[in-house]
Image (cartoon, rainbow, N blue to C red; front, side, top):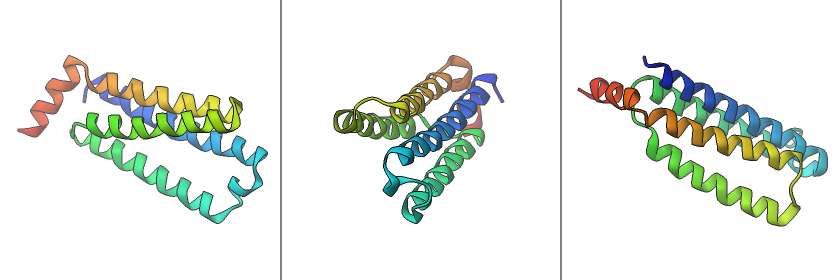
Length: 123
């Protein structure tokens, strides 16, 4: 497995952790969206499972670029709404980190080494 694939996986793990940290900081400002709320907790468990699934697909040799782009667009729209609605605080800083890690993962899976590994795995 190329080192860029491993780096992409690490970027996705950091992205997921930054999401959880951002939700923690959101919960300090808004009690209704803290981890003590079962809905918020459930959504974050589902998000963690989705990221784990994307990482699993990545390590199995599936090209996840389209997934990264689609989820990244949704994350960007959410971040823009969040900043326009609540301003830029500590939580939004971690949401930016989440998005940047998705961008980094995209670039890592787009390298020549990664593309050749995907091609070899798909045969």
